[in-house]
Amino acid sequence: MEYLEHVRADAARLSDVARTGLDAPVPSCPGWTVESVVRHVAQVYDHKVEVLRLGARPDPWPPDTTGRDSLEWYDAARAAIVNALEKAGTGLETWTFNPQDTTSAFWHRRMAHETAVHRIDVELAQGAVTPIDPELALDGIDEVLYPSLGGPWWEEGDTAFPVDAAVRLTADGRSWTVHADATSVDVRQGAEGEVAAEIFGAAGALYLWLWGRAGDDVIRTAGDADVVKAFRGRVSEATQ
Image (cartoon, rainbow, N blue to C red; front, side, top):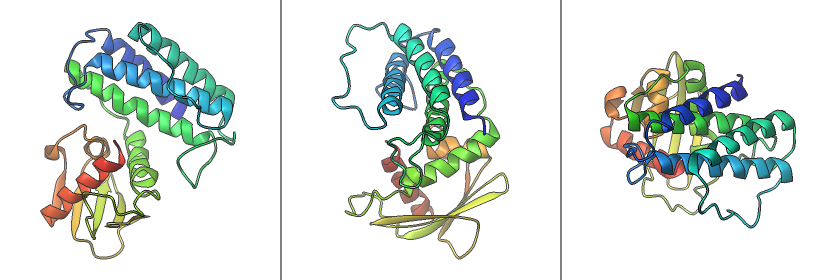
């Protein structure tokens, strides 16, 4: 997967679409405008540039960006993150939030999906949505399920959506089986075992549904509808 090429292409597309109207409301992010998305992504990029430079989380953070022109800041930040990812390569040891990957490869992948999702946000705001690459979408489903959903975040049981069931997701011939309760989420590749609910869709549609960028009309479900609803809520908690 050429993550860096996806970062370049989607970051450029985000910039182009944003220029058609910064004040447009973003339906997938209630209360945000296109400018909110632009400034959020610029800050995310700047943060990851510092993470790759330091090998650790920058502290203090964030810097004061009051008064910075939004588009100028974004374009500088996207050039900086591309340069930082190129310089780091994929083998640099650094801080990540994935206990199974503490290399810069994690940030190549994460920035590709960060950029793709927020590119969709500004496109939704302007009514100009373009497709998600199916290969990137399948990889993104993997990433949403682990580490975002299946990481070690739930030990305290502080979830509004305990689920307490098994759910299967299937897209473009691939399946994932997720077992969740109040204090853990276990994600496994494949379609083994009984489940309470199943969720089906094309890769791009399922990816956007998991990220809250598409409604229930883009997927199909079978089994317990309450489990599907609770599972969607749990994913929302994990991806805020």
